[in-house]
Length: 367
Ligand code: ATP
Image (cartoon, rainbow, N blue to C red):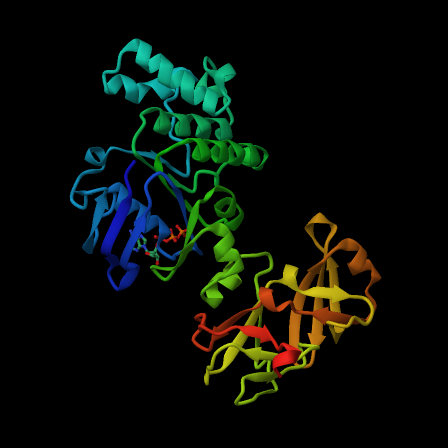
C-alpha cells in the first residue's frame, strides 16, 4: 500500500489556475473521491497524479518515491476512464488478460488473477462473451477488471459511471462499491456526482477553484461542512443559510432571534456577522403549536423523491426549506411550527468559513 502526497502542486493553463498550490496526503489503502463542480480542477489533479499532465510546479510522491517527473508507464498505476477502453474483436477474458501477458505472467497466474477479478465483479458467467456484444456498462466493468487484475498499488478512476447507460449505472455503482471495499489499493476517484462520492468514498476531497475546501469522511463533510460551499454543494437541496438570524446579540452572547422558542447563547465571541446553516432534513416541522417550535408560514409545499415533502417556510425575515415525512407534509396548513435543533446548526462567518463558535441552549440554572 502506498499513500499519495502532493507538495505545493500547481497547474496553470495560461492565466487559468486549474490546481492551486495543493499540499495534501491521500492515505494508503483508502478511497478518496475528488468532488466538485465543473472546472474546479479535479481532472487536472488526477491527470497530474497519473503523469498525463506536467505540473507548473510542486511535487508528487507515491510513498517515499518522488514520481513528479516519471512517465505514466513508470508510475505503475491502474486507470479507468470516462469511456470504457476495451479491445474489440476479443472476449472478456482476453481483454482482462492482455496487460498480464505484457507482464509475462505465467498462464496459471494469469488465469488465477482474471478469475479473481471476474468473481469480484460478479461477471464470471460473462468470461467468454464477445466484447462487441456487451452494453457499455458491462464494458466499463471489463475496463475496471483489467485495471484491477494488474494489482497496481494505485488506481485512478475518472468519472467511470458518467457515460454509462442509465439502466446499468446503478449496477456498476454497486459493483464499484463492492470492489473498493474489498481492495487494499489506494484509490482516487473523480466525480461531480455527490451521491456517487457519498457511496464510494472513505474520504471526500471537496474542491473549488483549484483548492480542496475540505478533506473529510462523507458523514463529516455532510454534517459539519467547514465552509458554506460544502453546505451548499452537498444535499438536495443544499443547506439553508440565514444571515442576520439574530435581532440582537447581547454582550453576554445571548441571542434574541425569531427562530428559537427558548433563549440561546453563543459559545464564543464573534464580533463579525454570523450566518446560520441548517440542512432541510434537519428542520423539524409541526402542523400544530409545539413547545420547542416557533410559528412560521408555509410558503410552498412540494412532494419530492421518497414521498417526502419539501416545505418552504417563512419565519420573521428568514426563509427556510424543510424536508418532512409524508404524513407531516400532508397535515400542514398555511401555518406551521418550526424547530431548529441546536446540535444540527452550523454557524459560518461572513467570509463563509466556520468560526469556533456554536449556539448553546441556556441552562435555566445558570442564568
Ligand atoms: P470537469 O468536471 O468539467 O472536467 P474539472 O473539475 O475536472 O471539471 P478541470 O478539467 O481540471 O476541472 O479544469 C480546471 C480548469 O482548467 C478549468 O477552468 C478548465 O477550463 C481549465 N483547463 C483544463 N484543461 C485545460 C487545458 N488543456 N487547456 C486549458 N485550460 C484547461
